[in-house]
Length: 371
Image (cartoon, rainbow, N blue to C red; front, side, top):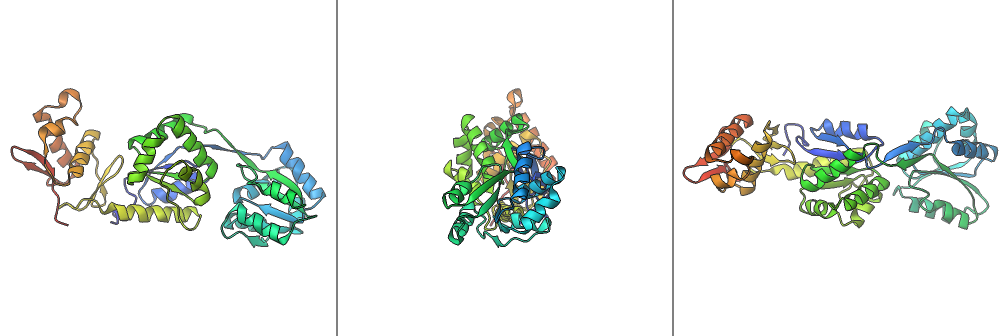
């Protein structure tokens, strides 16, 4: 179902990333999603890191034969750090004489942005492919500079050193704890209790941190159960990011191409396919974590109205008694007249008076059309 041109209408999507979160959020919001930012980690730049500057000076003094760029943001950050120290031009001159190897198109793009060209790009975008390629080419006696991301060396330094290379590491950014830990905890809890439709991951360290917190909070099993039924979509930008989630037993989706755009397209396809909903005379009804969408329109329901409609949708046209519906109402409001009033409010707020049928002397049912 195309939801009024907004296939993600009413979907609550939690972004666990600190980096590029605005870019991802904007793409999702344009498609109707309700985006919540709850980074599992913070990114710590090293622009003023004395060690990075010192390592850059050493590299300029003894230019490398091979330069490995593992991430686009890291390579760009390295150039920015060199520029802040007045070293950008000599650094780029030093890199110009080296063989430049990129772990994927993002790193290649950063190399090109610096006015350089990558000599080789890992198609799988994995450190393992990059490592195997250079080891097959041979690095013995070569000076190899490796720009690292925040999760460490991925074994590259050790492998190249063991093969006889002189390795210089450059750590351009690192990972820190979430800047808003209470938000991080809140949205893990919401993922477990039904307050979110999807949780999105763009880095393996972020995924690992999220899993660790979920396990500490005792809600990992509840999250896994929702993910297994499809009530909650756990989505990663690629298999490397998905690995910690899959190791924790979660059902994870990720696109064939490791890009934010591909991730968004995958989510649109997934929620379009699952948004068939319940057919009613007013159009298909799709229940989301915190909203209901009727024929592409997000319904302005009260929390009680939403829960009543959710119960009726689960019944799939079967009758729910007044007593069953009264159990949904808050405390003292749970009498038969209160149920009737709540149904009337639901009809009025939904703008669909015929959405809920009154079944005389029995109760109420969702008006379900024949498929």
